[in-house]
Image (cartoon, rainbow, N blue to C red):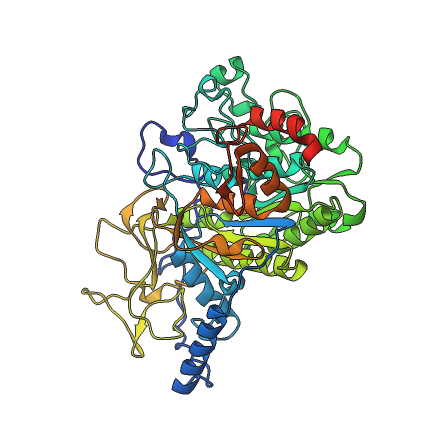
Length: 559
């Protein structure tokens, strides 16, 4: 298993420095001496049925279908937000080709499950103080409706990074908290630690995304009463708490006096002596699992609260999951189970966030193979959700928090191995020094081969899962990128995604589309009649934590 910490890298910001990032697992950099390359397979031929007539007719059919799209005249009962962490447009394109080639095709003609969703938009990902963001402010934007600073979770921009006192009273209500307060079932699923930035933003408020257990809290944080992220999950103050929380991060919930059930010689991280999984399990109908056998045994009809922590740190990459000691469910399996549990726990509906967290980690490591495999795993999870839900009552949104410096370049022939070397017109393409190069690469990262001339990749298996693609700028970790990311949506309210939008718009689409949250926010802010103002509301935006508590008491009779 891989127990090391993987956190999203930030652009050069000395004020944050290494506090927001920790070292990634060092995947071996393959060379000719350790990975003799088999002769690269010839590009796979396009499907025989392709023809000029078919291209024309299928294009016309797609255009007609788009022209005939009409918004669904319903409010959503359920909302599912999928986040491919670091899954930029280039990652989606390469994963699409990779999946298609794994299925025996040339690849380019393939579609990932979410690429067929009818409404598509682009999301601008910058944060209040960052041109290129980290996952904390981006996920905060998606689940609270506001943009904020680098490194902070679900607090306003008045909160300073790492300063507990500055965050007091700055907590902004999230879509998950709002849903739980209104009686919906709620859940989070991630292949990262569930205390990591993306899942944590849905339920925690903190000026430092790294305060995942009490062991990471600063002296100032302790003195001013800040709670660690894992504790905030267990002490969740709305409704009856989350119904589902599945992912990694077990060590952040266990005391340092308790041995890990999977890894011999390892123990928890907590210094306060609290065993948070035990506390979770004390509630009626609550279960805690840490391996696939226990997970498979869970009956969704008899489970009110399910906590699954399958690794001490992040879950395995999909590539490595079959070799895990305790075995782990796939992202699709966790998503399916979560939907079943949530569906059985509230007649009003549910809110579920699902993160493919390790796409990001593989990119930081400069390892395209694992990044694409995990992006495909997210597509599988979306496919599972599409099969289990009805577009008439469930809004499904698939997006990313940010992109990476990942490139798909050269002039490879149709069907060329996306992980292989560039072949053009049937011949191996060579650089100005007569050396082959790969289709995939990174602008920066650990794949830098300098300062000498580029290595000769002729004898290197660039399709090996451990191969690190070449990078132009030498960095220990590859960085995020600032370009827009895609939004793909289906269901009631999905038509609101049009053109290029600010990332915080995602929250507002979810909130105005869900029937309970839309009525509640209308009452508070006066945004009614399809989102247009109708008189003054009781509050000024945004919805703060204290506002929600007061608003619930004031509007209880109207709900």
